[in-house]
Image (cartoon, rainbow, N blue to C red):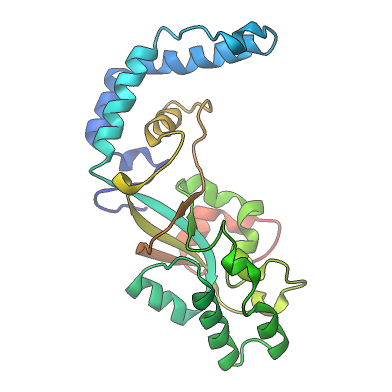
Length: 258
């Protein structure tokens, strides 16, 4: 369905490097026992407060640390897929495919809005509300691109319906009451980006998340939002009308039509 050379999709085990899968399978019993023991200790700690301050040693921690360190070392030679969900105009799709996905800036946001206005796609009133919004300079948004990494997250209707349903991204449509003009334009898109793992900071580490996914265990969270401060190369954009979009999102079963 989705395969990109030298790229890992976090919750798609068959995209993982063979050497990592061999390492996990060779130590499968000890790794699984580690996760089960961590959960057991946590459960005891719910009623025995002393466990919280003097946590027992997990007898499988040595093998766990050895394997996770080896996985982290192997991962540095690979890339990971970052998934960005948004609503785009056709000309924006073309630009992103050719030039990459750019971080948020006030100038960039304003230029996108001015282009819509020049094309007669938004009213003057809405243009005035969107230009120079404080959100474009917000410390938690400025200079960043938000992505996640698991295909399973694409089925999260409540987390994604506004991203798919309203043009511009959260910084653009936030605080805009009844943004119907922005809902009438653009196309819902899944943007698949390429991120070098050696330049990638994530906690808990990828190795721990991968092991939790492999063993279908929830001790470590599977997915996370990552905020990248550089332009990202784009491998593929999946549009709302593509069959793959429906397959990945299950959007045909969502409560609200997009």
